[in-house]
Length: 293
Image (tube, rainbow, N blue to C red):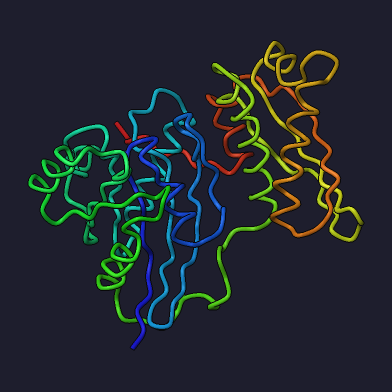
């Protein structure tokens, strides 16, 4: 009998969750950035082998939310924990001792699903530091999502904990999400790479038009910012910055689609969208329900 189920990857921001998803699936699905909080929504990747199918959910980093967008991100991560058949709790090994998942996620009770503690960035650890972590966490697995070291053992451990089940998706599928979503994420990733300070955190992307019947494929994406001053920064002097973002993002999108692309980028202001419930719903975020008094 085959095994199949949801593997939820959780951890603090910048633990390497998105890099791990990409490594597991063998495709670049989740954007990666040294800037924290780059993952805002759940990203689904599918790894299928002869005996098992892992539906891997990459999640926003576990944090203490300060505004509405971060509340929605935390809610998404907690919902993914509830959906999990197995939890891969990813820890940045270079940051010292491993805190329990229940404490990091501020859960009232331990998760329902079995938890595999995965110590990432093992390639950065000195032998003595690795030994100390191994002694303190004897059941943990050491991996490097960047180099791939330790990944076969991790997959085997995750598969062993999945329920017996037929495959949930076609064996050729690598994700459940639409191309528009990945185009938006690639444009946002490029903005994260090229912009500094608070500006990249204030950007949301939305595909307004996607014409696959054209050659090149025509895609219009709007980058929303929160203030007029941010719009000027994103556009740059005489449009230089937005042109550079467009050139780099177009190459990424062409690699995704395997076709030539005309990427038409626009920049608009949506005041204070990260703190506005209506704006967040427009971008597909779900805010947690406030407890009744």
